[in-house]
Length: 426
Image 1 (cartoon, helix red, strand yellow):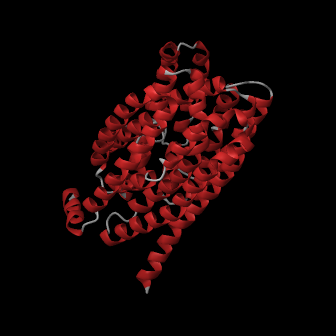
Image 2: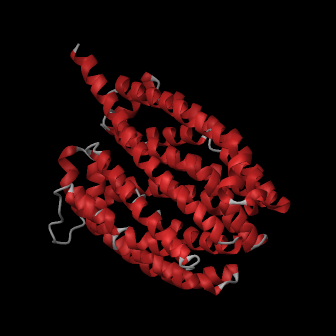
């Protein structure tokens, strides 16, 4: 009876976390819809292309911050090492973010040269200011996730979304063009500082320390590699379309991608954010880990699959009504990209499983292989325009990701294989 109650409490904790993050995402989507409609009607495809260039450049750099694996190590660390890991992580974050600020400002010039457009230089430098804010709350955010208090993370997401989208609409109406998207991201980042620091008591000791930095880096390097490859795949089509087609074509493709896959990916991210600490807490117990993993997959199926099919089937109706007739040419691309979301959450879940049991190197190897396949596919497909690129995105994901998901489950969730992993740690 006691074991049953514990399992029910653990399961309900995961569902509560999903509920909170899902609720925050619902708020985000409601406000984002208003923003998307506003800027879709006020901005043209060229403006969208400039926004895509600026945000793509910034997205690559953000991998080295909150998604670098440093926060993941805090979530996964044994209880007795948490304080030391946190103190070292705090200073590592300042080192990494300081370097990134300088690097992104420096890269603004070659990026402008690559796209043959100097208008993106200053916005890219302004976006880099976010890096100087991240170390002030990154450790607290990771500790909150470690404690499974994702309600706080949800509040951060929702609050920033409301403020950011409101500012974007106001600035778009004032005619600020791409700045209507860039400035709100910078101006609303302090929301994370205030809420995370208010809801966790941890503070740096102020004395510089890098104790156990090798352990953090060893763990983080594989996760960082995976995130870099994920980010490359997420933005490679933008790079190729913008470089080999045109800024206008990039704007059309960027709109289709965000209006289609954006909704699905936010839901997927909500589920995987909840899943990682959920699996880490059970990694010492094979049966509990297996139960959590497969029950989470059932939740993913019930949420993601209906959403993707519904959005794809309704695209021809809602795009011209909501966003305007000028975006009708983007509908086929939107549908293809949206359908590519179907296998993504299962691959993300498999990645979380590998990371939770210290097998992140396998995750890295797989992502390297998949990125090579994906890159070759896009290089071939770009000859057929944005439709060809969207078809390549769909085919590579539908064929490759299920293989990885099934293989990972069979590799790790066999009893003998799991106990071999435990012996390796000992």
